[in-house]
Length: 318
Image 1: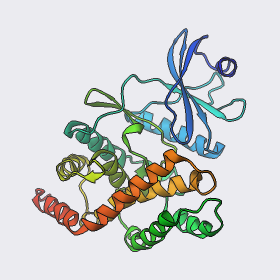
Image 2: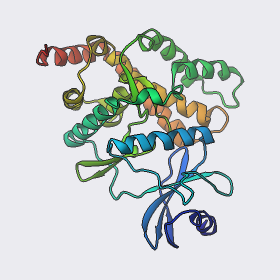
Image 3: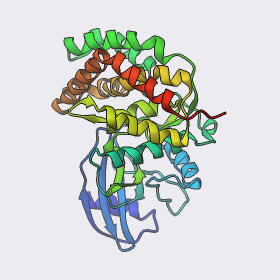
Image 4: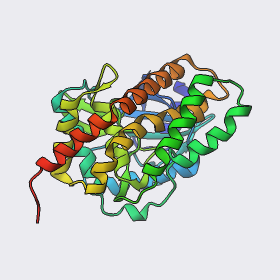
């Protein structure tokens, strides 16, 4: 690995490689912390993204950098480009930001809510058109592939077909759009204590309904023992509303977008690549999220009333 990294570093003004350390990998990238004679950086091997998708992410990151959005930003090569070709995959190098994955606390919920609201206010989102890589369309396509998939998961498939159909009428209603991150779980954030310092991994980012990010972030930061914590939910809603107020229609639809926050991630695991490659880690995650959605369905009326009560308690803005 050192040889490949040294070769890639020749295209950067980052000095000589001193050491590299493999970090805990996600589902789609392999990351290394590299120390060079000029500092520490994140070396990312993109195992799943297409070149067009990586370039989209690089362009978006430059726009977010201009508005000082808290993120880890890519480093330019000597030729002013951002993407290199490694031995087998595309490679990007990012700023390395010291910090940790947060614990779920009222303060971390407050931080992610404010930052989610900040991204929702990104004004130039129309300059970055593309389809959402996690969508109902993908769900319907996956369902068509179930019958011929290499691995059969009857319980998961039955759940997935029913839940996709259930959410379809709610998630297709017109509500405010903007730029969404799409994967605002704790492992895509960096905290210094209780302070959020960066959002990372924008590979799913795209313009779409803003409630998508709200629902995903609530899934990431407002659940304890796989159940929605009502106190944390209210903290999230109160702080997000400081940046952007919800419309009445969004308030009515939010319970379904919280369900989608789990269901969409399930679709991502099925697509990459549980249908054709068995992974115990991914299966465990899918079963956890599936159980979460079932509980959300059972408690849907209670959650809806809680959100409606929150909305009624908000001061009227003329």
